[in-house]
Amino acid sequence: MQTKILNDDYPIYTTTLQKSDTTLPNITAIITHFQEKITKHPVAVYIGIFDHYSHTASLKEGHIAPEILDAQNILCCFGKDLSNAEIVAVRPRSIAVVERQDDYVISFLKAPNPAANEAMEKWVKALTNS
Image (cartoon, rainbow, N blue to C red):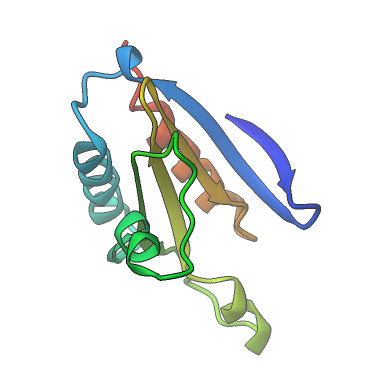
C-alpha cells in the first residue's frame, strides 16, 4: 500500500488491485472479506456498509467520474481508549472500495492507532492472490 496526502490534508493508505490479481469476483465479495476480518478481530466492531455510489447517483448535484463503476465503504471502529474527548472525532474507521473497469482502488484514512492501520493494511493485502 502507498501512503499519501489527499487534498493537502488527509493522510491515507491506498492501493490499486487489478481484478486479475484477486479471486474475489466483485465489490460485494471484497466488502464481505473486510466484514469477516472485522468480525474476527479482537477489538474492532463492525458498524455497517455505506453505498457511496448509490447515494451520490441519487443526488441532483451528485457527480461520479465516468471510470467509477461502484463505490462502497465498510465502517468499523477499533476504539478501545477514550482518554480524551477529541479522540472520538477520528473514529470510526472506513475502508473505501471503488470499482473501475479493470481494478479496485482500496483506501482508508490513517488512524491514530498504529495497530488499526496495521490490521487494515493486512486485510487489504490478503485480497491479492498468493
